Image 1 (cartoon, helix red, strand yellow):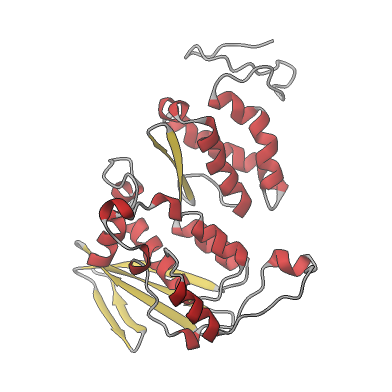
Image 2 (image 1 turned 90 degrees about the vertical axis):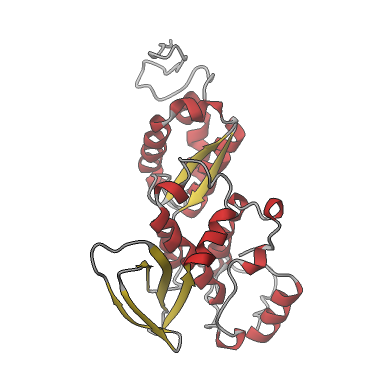
Length: 292
């Protein structure tokens, strides 16, 4: 048996505990039906499924009309990507953004940091914006001073400090012009609902963190999580080259030692694993620049 909600959409939730879906006619019904099982299989910890679905439903309910216009494939794809890396689509760690009839996904820097720390690439990550009334000093690739004064004023830049497993700290700094360049290449950045316009400072922190990861020796899992966000950038229509947005300021010779993926550590390799050196990694980067 099924029941209609106030909007007239058939939710078709079975009365016996509402655990199965008889008919799926809306994206909302699919979230409670066949999609839930697929999402659960993708999660690194299947115990997260209830929390994950609660977060997805909360975000969906904030703009149901817009999400119903999205193709089911695009909406499910975004949620499966979040599930794959164990990042909750809660509007804090990841954003599900309707873009016409497509749903797009943007990871917040906090969600990406969660993956980096969970994978053992870093012990701690801190990112912040620098405003016109702050006192800020950056010398010899180190942030020596950052004092915040209120009111802080306009954002002038951003920086990131990453504490590596050996206890050393790597820094990255970006000016406002560089941050604006990245924003201009983000799909839908002119929309009022874009995270760039709703949470500008948070997006600046994410941007400088993404650039900082260029000189980290990331495992495949972390590289995939960060690369999954690349689809939100439209470079060609603005005549820009992706590789110029997040250049690494640290020489390749100073890259930290490679950190193996947890999945790789648990699964024996079928073939011998070739560990690349910093030298041939730099040569490959020159031959085929990555977008980020």
